[in-house]
Length: 264
Image 1: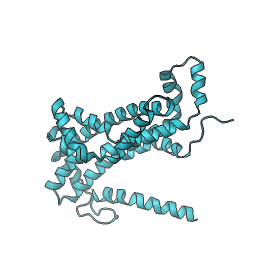
Image 2: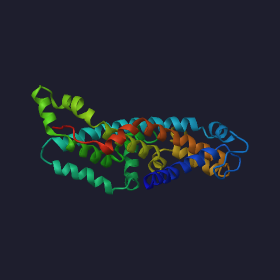
Image 3: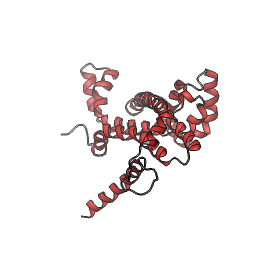
Image 4: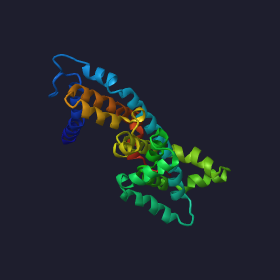
């Protein structure tokens, strides 16, 4: 009984803000979880006609998806080498990844701004993608590295005996075993980039390439009393995060319960 009560309590806490925002996006005056007396769609009409949310949404989607793929792919290679291959300076490389955990992104925003300006990438989606791909790499690195360390070396040795090289072994043997870890890191990287505001506000000034968080901040300043439109904005911003979790939820559950790859 206590277990189900705890589950119900967590469920209510998790769903309450989502339901509140969703229902109030269709109300003229926000308040409570009750159904709207009159369903209005003015908020959604406003954000698509005045805010240009479609362009902001598309920009965020492009930046988030590409930077997440680049980050997870590159860091997975680095984590594999760090976990499975011995070389000089291995401890130093691991320490360098760990050191980035203590560096807040805002503290390096000005050097990044100068660097992108010198490279001609300021105010471009390409520049933002490269910056976002490097944010949060330490968390991704250590999650993947811990999974690589849990895989028995006998599996790689068997692949090497059969004539498989490092690249083939990584793609054919190792990657299928760490799908839960990859799913977990994809979710973390996606959420980290999708919700990021500070760095984007520094690197982006052109309206045509603004991401969703920047666009929403401008909207709040101009239409601060339009609660229905604000609710509609939040609903639109929440959709991708819910979808990405539903896609990878099964793998994330496996990541919490996965056991050894070799038994017996």
